Length: 308
Image (cartoon, rainbow, N blue to C red; front, side):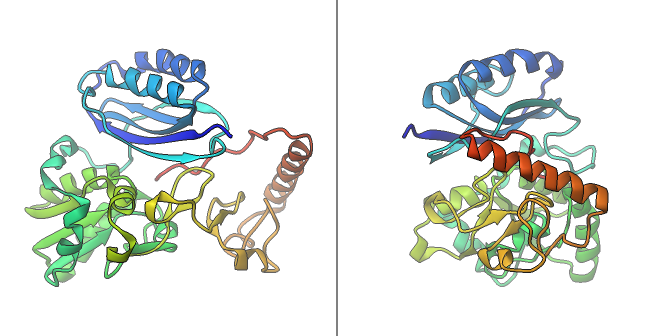
């Protein structure tokens, strides 16, 4: 079986005229049989792609040719089957949406903590440790002692933090997220709010799980990822979760035994959230998925959950 390379990356860099980069980038990816999603905005690039080694290398080389992106870094993992169904390059206002203007995430690299030093930082009782991800991600794994803001979108983080900080007034703060991108923005935001002693995990949870031996790890559970693998564990090995293709929530084998679970239609988290029209559409979609599988084909009608 051909090994598929999965590459996750982001880079904050000024890209005036970023709209013109879309088509050449899309052609490079398609020419290398690479699937995934890449976001382009005036502030930089953000994406996850998967494909054969040569194709992924060609896309990464293309991205490194963009202004300010020559030092682009990425995290790699490997799988036997491409976890994406199509290739998309999207034009956005932000590469990760926080909705706060006037901050400088490109300067947040000054506040990196490498994975090897992260355990010491979060073990300090005077440090507030914040998981900046959304609630459905936190629900399947996080660091010991981390605060869960219980957000459904990254847009909610600024208001949550202002309210939390008014009540607790922490002087030292450490933050983490899946791959690092949200923490670049949240760190810049906290600095704009007057918090000087703020750091974040370099490379995010994925780099920590790849770098820190499991026996030394302070991570509990699995890490949600934004592709068909659903979750990964230490050494970035595939996790135990599946996904509800109706609400895009991670689900367990126990969830599948629930009377509220219908494959492709509902799960315990969403069974009472869909109207009759939505349920009918979901049932039809699952029917097409099953037919495609019987024919030995891949159904490409489902979009992946976007990191919000």
